[in-house]
Amino acid sequence: TWLISQLFAGSFLGVRLGAVNTLLHYGGFLGAAFSYLTAGKWHAGELAAFSLTFVLSLNAAFIGVSNLLETILLVYCGRRLDFRKIAWTSLIVSTSALFVVVAASQLGIIENYISASEYGRTREYLGFLYALQPAQILFNITCLACYLWKGRMGLGLGSLLILCNVLMYQATDSRLSAGIAILVVGCTLLLRISPIAHAMKAVLGIIAPISYIACFVISWVITVGYNRLDGFYANLNYILGNRLFWGQLALDNYGTGLFGQRIEFIGSGLTAEGRLADVGSYNYVDMLFIKLPIEYGWLFTIVTIVLISYIALLAIRSKDYSLAIVLTAIAAHCLIDDLAIQLQFNSFLFLAGVACLRSRSTAIP
Image (cartoon, rainbow, N blue to C red; front, side, top):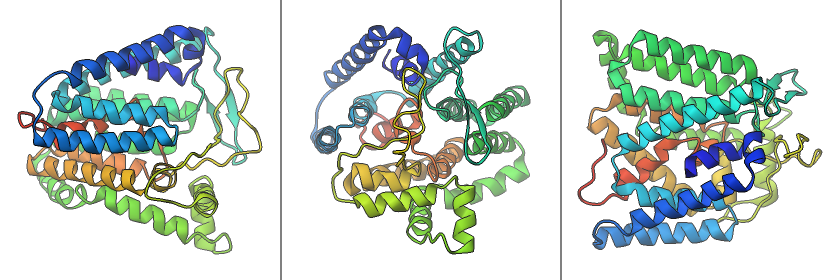
């Protein structure tokens, strides 16, 4: 119920549901947290994991990001669960929620706003308050399907996923999400072809474990080095939708610290009435690896990157190349999008608990 409420919360359907969605949200969160925290036995490893979770949770509470607080606690609480069960549940719930919201917007039950940017890009919101959210949900669905079917994915399912992402791109102009999602499907299908698969596995063995660190470094190099008078950076900033400008501005205005800070980032999302929120005050940072140290602090940033990098390394060691493909794709996606730090948009965050904050009896699937 927590996942359903979070997916609906970013849509006009959630606005219509109002208190009902709020009840699903907190009821689901408290129920899951209580059942997981009171299950199993505690030992030294558990206490260390709990202590780290407690510190990160205090940081999230201090900066006032309730969604981050819930994400940290749920990731910790889910460390004893089989991730494949989590993945299946997330796939079914996310697919159903996305279908319901998009269908409701197309049938006129809820609003489907359309916007045009200064770059001439037209986007449908498909019933959501933020145009990029449906594409990010579909990206997560695609990654979950590729992970769960692994090398058994057939051309039928692969073609369906590609078609859905193409249609989503046509509606929302979410180039990055659609492009990387299609690449994930293509690479997953190629795992069935022995000669190509052998070469892919060798490459993944090198890039997957360092993908998050590499993407973090790339983000900082191009953002700190951005100069609007430099032709290369000017063109790159244009391609990235002015993300370098806003990232550098945020670094100059807010700086970074060991712990997070309260910042009101204002983006191009809609209010419940369908109006742009605080027009003229835009300061949003889309690049996750830039936003993390600014808003959440270096402690949270380092812990997150280390844990996910460790998971990617475990995927290679266990020869789970489908998972390695997905994790590498998410790292690339984080270069210019910040939604992957939220569980409803990235189910693979649960692996931080399953693989690294796990109990002794739990292993990465």
